[in-house]
Length: 439
Image (cartoon, rainbow, N blue to C red; front, side):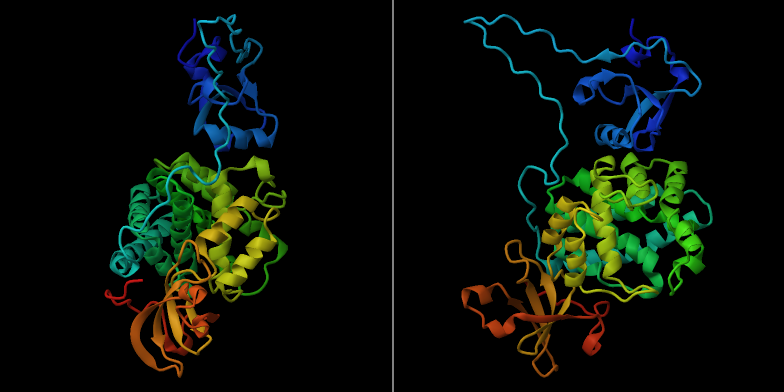
């Protein structure tokens, strides 16, 4: 007779099984039961030993947790069942044969269903986005400080930050992406954590994730670098190249983060997976375990791209910020090796060459800031002009650059180059979009 753990646990009581987060499975562990029916997965055998790293990622695609045999117990009494479909009934003229249920396959990165539409214009969303950004920055500082001094993480606070970001991004993605470009070098770690959260949610919105998934991917982004709080500051803030020993210590931050989140209460399995695997690479040259493309999950691949992009476009103690275009060229050149190709290309399409909050100079010498992107004209966003051709302040007014493509706007309004924050005394942190400016 089968017990609560199914037929594979026929000679083992609940006390002989250990509940393990799927992404934390190790080679040699024997899986006895899943957190869902076996027939909802592609695993043909009910009860099997993890023998390859790729099997860990495959199990994590379908399960949040599994039950494994407690170490030291013999597997000799287990007789794994194999999913065998019953033989088809003989065809009858009066009975139409029913199709066999297909094995669940990995879902595509872009989810089915309609794309999100903006519920309000970007200028009207700016105050709410700014408030969520300010509150989120304060909260992530508190969360990271708790990790640094060994206190329990406030997971509810983290979830509230993510929820506020999701709500704003669902209403209008451009306002919150703008806020992610307000950066300070001396606050890099906290701002980077919040920015990866924001950009991951914005990317998920582009991929048509539902709000539950947006909250999951946002939390993964917010907590992905929590392990750096256990790396010495002299290594994190070192302006010169790290020594081999220092690199080894730095490369331990995914495992340290995984340990921190494991000890916290209520952390979702996806965040545990991402904190450990966001520095893995498709070519196997990542760390900490050197996994290859088919051995780590979709969320880890997404955060890997977003993490690298925000790092490249930020001033750090050892490197100056690259422009969005330069950063995206690096993503493109390293797709398939350092970054998952599908994720890298989709992110480039989502964020565009001139994301909201980018200062730009036009061919006619005018200066503006990108207010909003356009789905079909990523290189021709909506701008708010702030300086005239002689670099004098001018009344804010919106310019739709896509009109240069139809001839309704002179091509002198095309973007000549992007500018660093602070150029011509223009700082994003101090700038306020006028509410009547509606792109």
